[in-house]
Length: 329
Image (cartoon, rainbow, N blue to C red; front, side, top):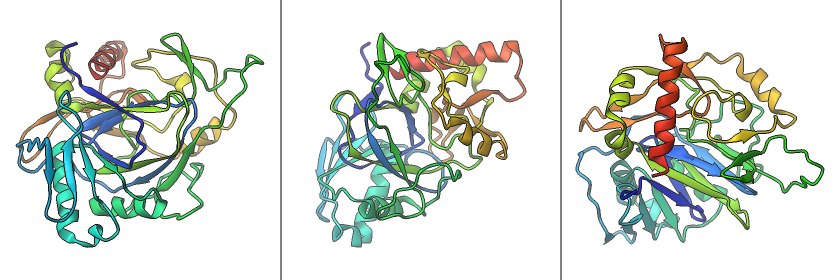
């Protein structure tokens, strides 16, 4: 397609993401996210609640800018309408409130920041998190915490190499003819909470020699490019989410094959049973600039509020597949 919506990053640097985006693959502040992880070890600090996008509604689109405070900023790439790369962040520069405010402004405007050349430590990751808001711990006790330089919210997401010569493919997926481990469909973090995070700060501790990429897609651009008929039908409707990360039970937007659950997944499911279901709008509007953001995460979704019937399920499935199409564009 002519326009690139998604950005695929190895994230050797530290990157805060908010809910303009969808990650995968995830929604970042204005983006959505997703990931296919043959082997990776993540450290992630979550940040407390807020809304989306920039205060002014005007994209500052700095191709490259040097600040008097010592940091420099450039766009993620000419093909993307979101995301910035920041250089020059150190412990000393973070002592300056002007620098911290500049980082917040960049994040509000661009939705995704990749910090390059920054100290790769849990302490720095936590300090960067505090720039954007107070730390928020993960709601489940079964989620591993980082043991070194631990602060609330710093969790450990890792995957060990596996020998599948015995035919045991539990927990793996097949997508586009490839077997993948730790695959994450498009989602936004903590969708199962009633209160969403403003941002999450991700850091790769050890990356896979092959694959191990994380994709981000822009919810603003996806909204504009979304099928108009589908967009009109889902706008104004809440999506229901629950804490169930099993890909085998994912009902909407599937574009992969599963082979069963890994042992231990049931512990998370049992713990999550005490959590109420959460609801978030499929489309939200920024209260200041009125910019609309498509905010659907197929992973961990249950259906549409007041439409948990065959018609509603068909509508949401169509919307999720349209999201897959646009996010990968």
